[in-house]
Image (cartoon, rainbow, N blue to C red; front, side, top):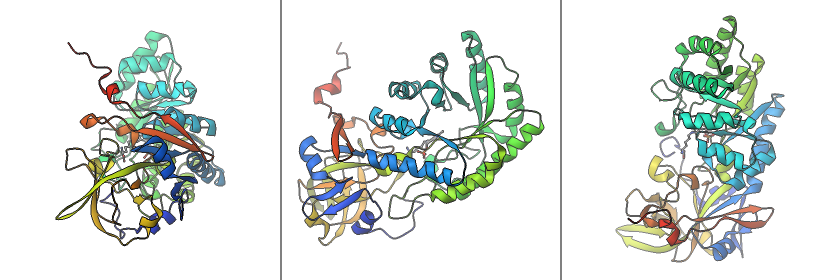
Length: 436
Ligand code: LLP
């Protein structure tokens, strides 16, 4: 996020060094997981999302292993919202993950990717009754309940269906995650969760309600968090709460630790996983509860990029590099002023002198800007650039604004490139519209 990174702008070479999945070859140019990006652009056109299965598996293993090192079993539920492509859900299911979903659409997607309903956690501040009913009748593993009102609703629906809902209460710990205001969720002023002061009475009530079995607590304090410190504050409050509930004679067996683990968008290190796991062990490791994690960005962010071509370079007082990708593909810079690395794909350009320029898309909004005053070489029309770390909250947040057909996406797996989303055809844009 532009407002929380204070280091100097990394150079192109620094970006490369910080990302082991990327390499620059004298002949093939920029490669991702060993595959030349020019070859992908030649075959599938641009803009195109490029994902690396190897990176996803490696990141999943690194997170799991950080907890194994602490001898602390955690159940990883991939946050589907970060990237809900079936091919990606399939990778995490095979790696042993469950899913964290926030809508019936995500629930059905996860099921379509053969993630068992039992392994799905259903979060969200406004689950509609039809969504709750559908998930219940499919045997969803757990609802993370965000209010007293929702608790009553689930109890009534489950009772009517003759089923039992497994739930945890999402507690709002009122801690500042130190991240961008638009993705902070654990402050009292945010719409999420139940104020800590209300949790004991609600927990007690939940344990008497028909159609409900309450197993524990959940928290999620925000996203793109780079230090264990805010988590430590939240988890300590959760541990205190678990002890208080138990002192009341209530049973607590589950603690869902949420997601939010941050990545380095510049050349800074992302969350230190060993320190994170050690902190979890220290704050909640002794409670004897089953621990759940809901990471999204950490698993897929650096495992994807958006490959685009330069349409033209325009001089208008300053240099503008106009790409064929736009805010309708990657909305994060427009929405959060977020910083994404941008690398030329051509090996010759990589070593050319740099000068500042704005990298923009063709959409008719000034917010359609990927980077301001970015130090880049001259990028002639037709050359390609990779917009980095776009695997999380990229394609899922894209739209067809300005009647721009949805971009294609490919998955690299063991050096093989597979088309996993064909580029949308212009006529598909109005396929579902009814002309009266
Ligand atoms: N669990 C819950 C309850 C969540 O609300 C979220 C994200 C996650 C898990 C996963 O968080 P992660 O590990 O990916 O940080 N569109 C924004 C991020 C929004 C995050 C919303 N909630 C962005 O592009 O930065």
